[in-house]
Image 1 (cartoon, rainbow, N blue to C red):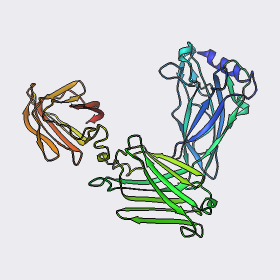
Image 2: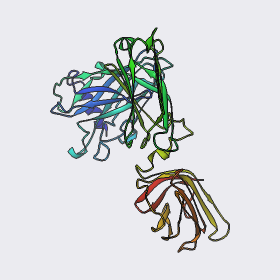
Image 3: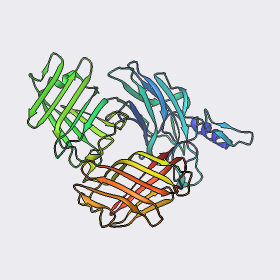
Image 4: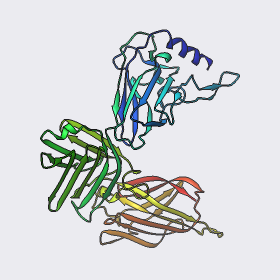
Length: 438
């Protein structure tokens, strides 16, 4: 293992600063991903020494999502950190360290140092990929630029064969940043709504040229992206502020932007968001400018209220467990398992009556025979069903509200406290989620 440091240092100073293409990718929500691409080179990189800097008063919060340890087929990458790794007296690694050489948390810049080690070609890092992610604290600043450059003192980027290559590095602006997003599901088709607000890093001159603002809402499973267009003209843009409200009953949309603060807001009511799920992709086009952001559950509806699972009904099978509880009994076979949550099915015409149903918690499966559920208005329910193992089950699955409840009692629940997998199966539905049992 001592040879790692020797190899890194020897290669690092054997050649000038040359290597591959290094880019910053804005992943929205103040996260930037650092990528490399060596597809134009004859040899792979062996070491990276990079400086990442932010401006405008912003600071770096943390560096994360980087490879740690030797590169292998299952987890390739650059996980050797000679500047901070620690070895024991035998030369074995006792702490891999981190890629942060200097700077970092609370500062406007960070120097990164990372290398690769592998023993077989099949375990080599990819020709291109991600090195790490960096979380940035904007401190309320509306415009922040992120730049990555080679660290010349550390050797920049070095190839395995020490040949000279062309180095290209660049940066990015934190284009569209969404601080708040609210999504609601309507009672029927085309009655959904969405609103979003945050910052856009776009110049005021984009609003002086007649054209349009186009906002597109999409996600991996959305049936049809929600696209809303707003005109740019002398009526919608005045005194540095853009504002347009469109009321085309039942559709109602609005978009506003203040060039002084870079703040924007968008809203659309009575639209179809069928299939929308997190991460939600928001793209904003203003003339020839295009910015986008991917926002997750921490932003959409806040951390305590998930995006409506109802939007996935008829699109895909999904499962969301909101609450699970095991009530232990002092008597034999007296435990009670209760599960509540949300679900959707791709096949809206599913018939839960004629098929068997199973609940698997960890390694224990509870089998509910076919014809146990009874059909109601947009729902299926069963109660006091005695299972082959002597358990008694009850359940209610509502296709209209997309909520379910399950109770299995008079049994010994084998799963102990901690994280365990829960799986529900019926017809073509076969979905699982990790749950935590207290």
